[in-house]
Image 1 (cartoon, one colour):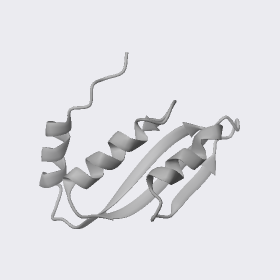
Image 2 (cartoon, rainbow, N blue to C red; image 1 turned 120 degrees about the vertical axis):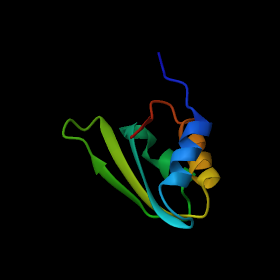
Image 3 (cartoon, helix red, strand yellow; image 1 turned 90 degrees about the vertical axis):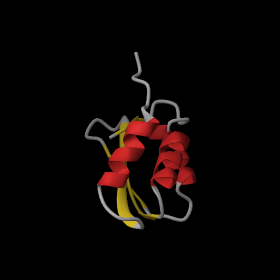
Image 4 (spheres, helix red, strand yellow; image 1 turned 90 degrees about the horizontal axis):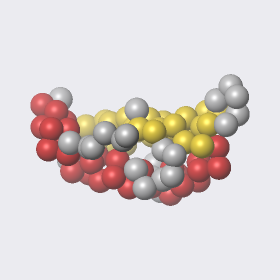
Length: 88
């Protein structure tokens, strides 16, 4: 069963991690056919893609200059809509 995302706790951790704006790195694992959907979540940012050794999955790394914890949370919520996505 998928664990429920604790938005309040995560927001507090982001606020405690430093001052905004800050450089923030997202990492996702998606099925190979879903890589364009990850890029669509981050249209203004470079998405670094790396295929898994078995070729079934793609890891995506995105670095953004985040203006607020809420911006980071919004990106995670959009990415969570992608079928089969795993947020790291």
